[in-house]
Image 1 (cartoon, rainbow, N blue to C red):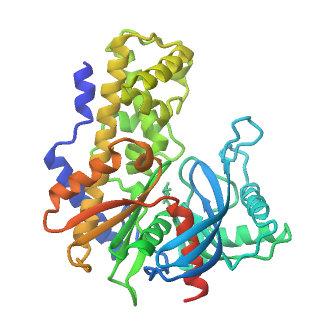
Image 2: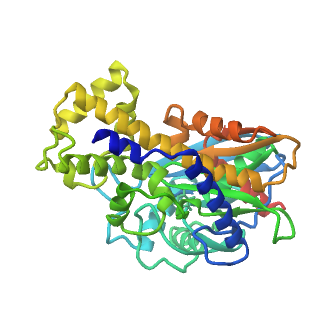
Image 3: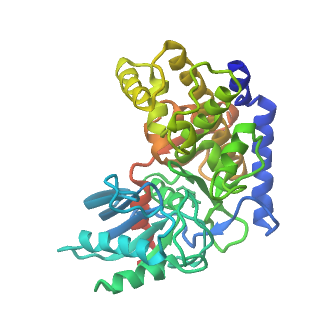
Length: 427
Ligand code: BGC
């Protein structure tokens, strides 16, 4: 019965190609304004030249941590981080939790403004770039309208409003006269940061708490425009039973289906749902329904999955501690069960992401001869062994007419915000 569960996560070659084809179809539909699970949201930003310079303040809001940085762009693709601060969305000591149900827009944007105020103490700035990583429709580089929240965040009174104005108001009430010169999605930021360095970048993508990709669109604009596809919402996917169970328990059922199959926020939950089901069907003898973990959504973090797949003595030790804490017997069979499930869940995520990139790269004209780069960022690409290389390998196997690489763009979400501010203020 373990074999059955493992096989459910397997993607065969035909299904993989069908996913890529459907992704292309959905992009095309979004491009002509037809109903689609993907979007073509213009960023009003074009590729940078690499010579942008100045001292900018960058906000990265949209993952598990809020980050603010003062960044010096030095031209020739180089930059220096002058100062940085970071705060988790949920305080580990329990003093605050902005993912909670009673949070308002004022709470959240006030919190962001407080951190900017702290960063700017004793520092002057040439402008502010705001990476805001949620679906929004932009009217220009510095104005946008919030479409929806994802990643289980839902501050009240914010949908339809401009995140830049909400932040600007919060800054103003703290005595800071600074409005974002640019508001961008994190994938756009990663694109800009990657491209600042190497002009062969033709897409930007994040796989961290959430998942998404932006691409260059040549069709409808005066210049090749970076557009956000909200790829995490892609829905023409071979969902299995466990995906459906997970989805039905989230705050946004039916939405962000791709994200729920590939991103850091959900992979641990997918494992938990699978183990619980196997236990309930009698396929796992050490399952104890009275343990809290089986009734507590999101009780398995991606970090724990990492210990499960590593099989090193240190990882085993950490895992044993975690199992003892949760009340799961530390038996060899259990380690083996966890390891094999984690492998198939992550391998499926890699294949799905690769299918979406394959579609994106095929649509893109080979402008720079035979090199095509996708700038990537996010915890999965950064920390998960083989995640970046595994995705890249599939693309290289499938696209032998060009040389495709994924380029990990450290701090892309922040560096890109600084570049966007520079592009907006010094066009
Ligand atoms: C959001 C995207 C964002 C992605 C990665 C998704 O949940 O909808 O806008 O780019 O997460 O942070």
